[in-house]
Image (cartoon, rainbow, N blue to C red; front, top):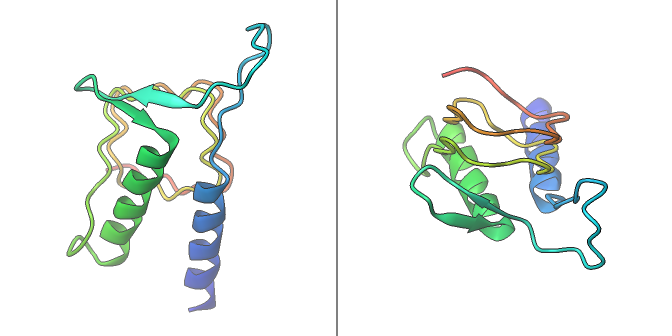
Length: 110
């Protein structure tokens, strides 16, 4: 039980700390809000991704009875901070994860 609580705490911390870090050399004076695009062309924001990951975590924890499996097919998650994120069984087919921080994350193949 303690193990599950630790995992949940790490996942929440990771989701809440999700942030965009611009690549060096872009010459940006202001930090732009992080956005991404998923397979169908929908643009998602940091808040959208947080909701997707929360629903996915619920889907995992309830053994697929509640929530939704994360479908991040072809999502561009470059520079995303996914520290502690629960990505086990998420669909990341052809997702772009360049420079994404996946430290302490859960990734189990489908």
